[in-house]
Amino acid sequence: MNACPFCRIVAGEAPAEVLYRDDRVVAFQDSNPQAPVHFLVVPLEHIPSLAEVGDEHEEIVGHAVSVATTVARRQGIVERGFRLVVNCRRHGGQTIPHLHLHVLGGRQMTWPPG
Image (cartoon, rainbow, N blue to C red; front, side):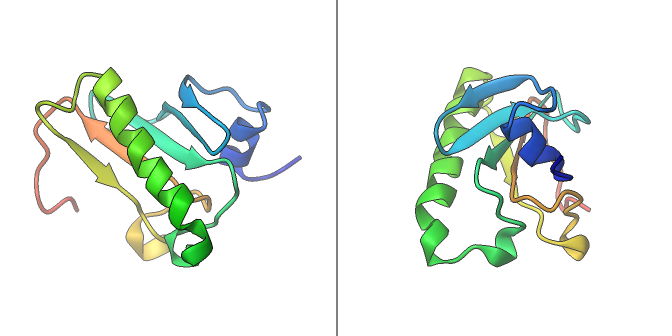
């Protein structure tokens, strides 16, 4: 069994409230939401972090951002605004070593984030 929790969700081996799925990414509710709307967009391909993204990943990263906006629109947070976050490695706050985009909205965000 794969130890990566996101790979397990991608494979259908772990539960998730899926909001969107295609042949490149899956979007699902965050299990520990930090805002009224908080979902993740995860590439189906296991890419450990943003630090490992190269030219060959340009299309998938762009697609993931586009899907983040599409799902944010469906969730009703585009008009007032939302935050898109990609944590990278330990000091960047990444806790699961699989590239993922956090989409947060439904409340006023503060700066700096922490």
